[in-house]
Structures are given as structure tokens and as C-alpha cells.
Length: 469
Picture 1 (cartoon, rainbow, N blue to C red):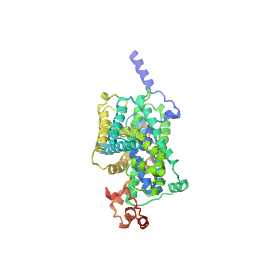
Picture 2 (spheres, rainbow, N blue to C red):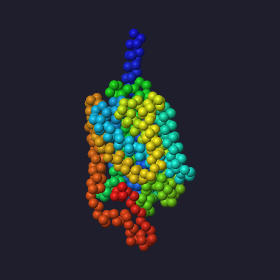
Picture 3 (cartoon, rainbow, N blue to C red):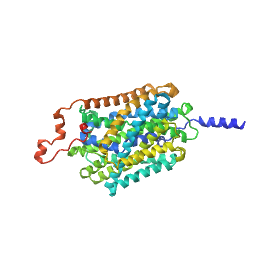
Picture 4 (cartoon, rainbow, N blue to C red):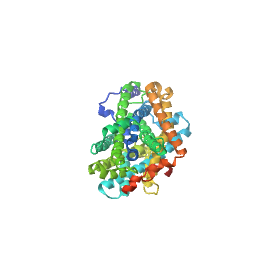
């Protein structure tokens, strides 16, 4: 009799209705995912786009915002409804060949991103205080791993949330440089499209940085983490009475996080457009180089804000990159999973997390060109996002997986539109690569103009020449 009462009590706790939370407490996985999207390697990509094309790519940030919101809501809903991350759902319902291909590419892209982020953070800190970049790379990696491995998730999650404040450095930077707002606004609303290989490569890199597979895996798995960490909560398929509150929270969280993310990306692109591009500096290789180039043009304060932001957002992004890779691999092989578990309880999960970060450190001590690795990691993200997004949309519309919580028409259309846009961008890039470029098309970028020669001022080369990769 006692056992029966305990069982009934457990069931009643498991299906306890969710309570509507205050706004600040509704922000979590979506806000962190959005902020992590503006990692140091992302900052480098946005800086390169602004420096190389001026206002020519501002439109892309506005264009991708609703697409990013839609696909991230889909990923969050899959995690919360099923109680499993994306990799676990793919493993259960789709061929293993698809799962292993996706996870392998995700691991490669994430590890390269970790390497680029650690290197950028170290270079930015060296610009601020001097010292050894190699020492800083190791120190940042150890600090990131220590927080993830040894701090319980309920105490660690708020730390990630507060780290998002580092991105306000890029909002502040815009207001310490002179911006022609009317001109910038017109270029944002009326796109400047150029069907050239260098433009399309950068565009795919921007799309791949903005709509990144690691964010899908992270947000879905974080929804599962938060559900497991909260008393009395269960996957929505098992506790439909909790759906209203949690689906509303996911919507608020994701709208806020993605809007914040794209606003920061817009400001980074705008800052480099009105400073670096306007002064003929069109070849930016890293986020730290963007900060250094900004110093003589935007002033010391703008430089300090830009460089400090790189360090802050890197401390947020590295755990997300390593964590999303660990979630994906652990779910694929049915290992114990979660930042809420201790090291010995989830050795495989933490092993992947540690390995990805360690390899990221090691790449900074090799002869691998970090610029090429950085750009191609963004391009890989853009390419692999297409099949992942397609599978996500199929899962989100499947009653077998989502039960009564399949996505409605508006969200379904938005998700498929995002998938189609990413596919179109990748195809356009591949066509541009395979199409011979006219000799005169590269001349303006590669050679100084007559006026430059007369002034004795060499013109900067375009930073993303696809033929050089």
C-alpha cells in the first residue's frame, strides 16, 4: 500500500503543471545560444564582411533574423517535447549513415571553431595587457573546462547567462564612431547583391555563422538538461499540461536571444564598414586584427570595447561549442549525458568535451593556417546545416516523434524557408566556384588603382579570395 502511494505521488509530481515565470527567468538556452553565435570566429566573419564589402552585407543580418528564430524554436521544441536531443532523435528515427555523417562534420567544424576562438581570445588579451598568447590559450581552455566539468549545471547556467552581457561591448562601440545612419539604413533595406565567388563565399560564411548547426544541438539539449534538473517536470509528450507555459517560454527566450544575436552582428558589421572599409582596410583575418585595426580609426575606447568583447564572448562560446559536440556524440552512442552529472558518471560525454577543447588548443600550436580554417569552418557549418535543418523539420512535423505537439503551419513554413535559403546559398556558392571568373573581375581588388599609385597608397587586397583556398 505504501509503495502504491509513493508511486502515485511520483506520478503527480512528474505531471505538475508548469508555472509562468518572470521575464528574466524565462531567458536561458535561447539567450545563451544567441549570444554564443557571436563568438570570436563569428566576430571575425562579420568584421571581414563589413571591411570587405562595406554596407553591402548589412541586409543579410536583417534577412536571417526570422529564419534563425524559426529554426531555433523548432530545435528547442524537439528537445522539450521528446525529452531527447537532436542526435538521439536522429538515431532513433533515421539511418545511422546520416547520423554519423552529420556528427563527424559537426565535430570537425566545432573543433576548428574552438581553436579559432581560443586563439582570438588570447590575441585580444595580449592586445589589452601584453603577455604570451600561448599561455593565454591554455589558461582559457582550462578555465572553460573547469567550469563545465566541476561546477554543477544549476550553478553554471546562470554564469553563462551573465556572460551574454559581454556582447554589449559591440553595441557601445557603434556609438563611439561616426555612423551615417540614413545611408546605412538604406543599404540594409535595399540589398547590394553581387554574384561573384568572393561575395557568395562570404555570404555563405555569414549564413553559416548565423544559422549554425551547433546552436541547434545546444539549444535542444539544454531544454532537456533544464527539464531533467527541475523538480516535477517531464517531456511535454508525457506532461501536456506543462506545454502552455514552456512553449511560451521557449518563444520568448528564442525571440530575445536571436534578436540580441543579430543586433550585435549588425553592429559589428556596421562598425567595421564605417571605419575599416571607409579607410581602405578590406583584409581582416581575425577578430583581434579587427580590434587592432580599429584603434587608429575609431579611437582607444572603441578598441578597448571591441577587444574586451572578444574575450567575454569567447568564454561563453567555447563551452557551447564543446558542449554541443559532446551532446551529439554521447546521444549517438547512448552514453550517460549531461552537465548535471559528475565526471565519473558521464565519462564518455565529458571525454568528448575535453577532447574537443584539447584538440582546439593543439591546433593553435601547429602550422595550420587559422584564417583558412576559420573561413572553411563557417562554410562547413553552412553546408551541413541544410540536411540537419531538413531532418529537423521532418521530425517537428512527425506525430510519431512530437505527438500532439507537431509544429503548426506558420512555424513549419518559416523553418522550411530557412532550409531553402541555406540550400540556395550553398548552391550559389558552388556554382560561383565552378564558373570561371573574368580576368577583369579580380583586378579592382587585387591591384592598386591609378589614383592609388599617384598618391603612393597601395590598395588593400580582398580578404576572401576563393581561388586562394
